[in-house]
Image 1 (cartoon, helix red, strand yellow):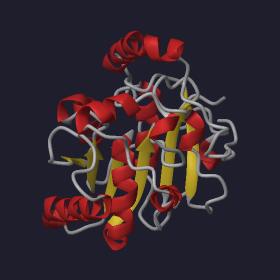
Image 2 (tube, rainbow, N blue to C red):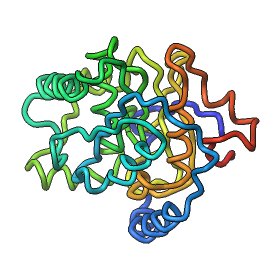
Image 3 (tube, helix red, strand yellow):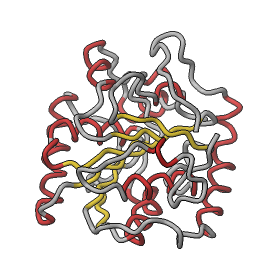
Image 4 (tube, rainbow, N blue to C red):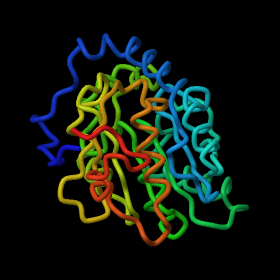
Length: 264
């Protein structure tokens, strides 16, 4: 794992190359094949707490099903976000985030214990903001390929957003600063330098405190919900005992430890 340092979230960040973007479908397919033969026997087992999964832009539960099923096999109670196809915020952003928080609370109320929130791409933005609103009910946040430190212009997904919404993604400076601020719970950002959709620099926390970390894996953006390297990190992070969270870096020297991504 390479140390992560936040770069300027403005002009210093560029979207991934069109070459990487063009390779996304093939790479995601190969990663899906790898997921099918992944050995999960050495992964830490879950303690049964709920894990809410938020899909990426223009996707739904069907796409995140490999991640949901993976969490279930480990022994967690996986919960889809429950709002179908993710087309971006519906209406005013703050009100939409309040709606998401209320929805998570309703869908996990019966479990009666803090939940982990896992979000892929735009879904990771949702997970972070929901955690800020439900800090007492959230155990940790795991984002996967989520550009919280940048904007839509630092991704190759801006066109998709505009096609779905008929307008540009919100770019207000105050909103962008809010999104860059980590939630008050342990927060892990999984990213790839070979992501073909999201600029990897936009996934870094910088100096955000001891409970905000960035973890590098190798892989595409579209294949992240089933990428074996991503899944192993997710397993390691979810297995952190409540109230005794340890940074991923503390495991990095344990090459045979369960739930580790490839070290760089």
